[in-house]
Image 1 (cartoon, rainbow, N blue to C red):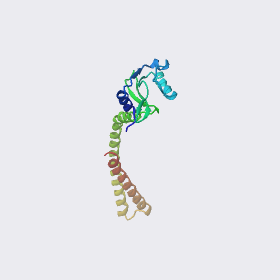
Image 2: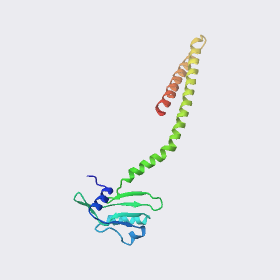
Image 3: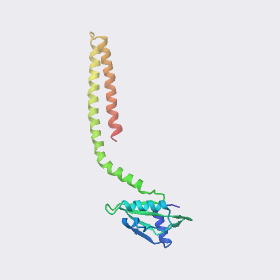
Image 4: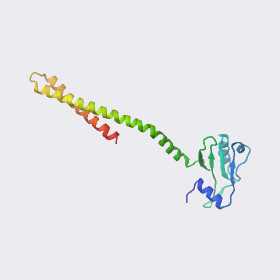
Length: 177
């Protein structure tokens, strides 16, 4: 079965274990759950020192035959609630990461749109570069007085123009879907 803070509170209710609401200044004074390790006491006191309200069962509950405890931490300034298990871990890290991604994606998606616009301008430039290279290659090939160096330069320009065209096409196609 799932082993998490929500389940700890469900079991506390089912087992008739009272739930404590501990204000930040009360953790230092010792208003803490009974029968918990010094590590848990330390975690709860750190939360209180950070100004967080702790909501915790008054003692560990039986969770699949093992004593377990977890708590909710409430920031009274922001209203943020997060959970913490006896190991110090909580589910909120994943939730927080998701919120950060969602928060950043909105503004960053505008930069993606800007990047796509720039890529399409690059595509236009690559088409013009390719057209110029084709014209130079044609002029060099059709001019009987053109030197070998001019013809080689025209072929290299055509190769560069082809590369620019490929890059100009792939940029918007790959990045702007």
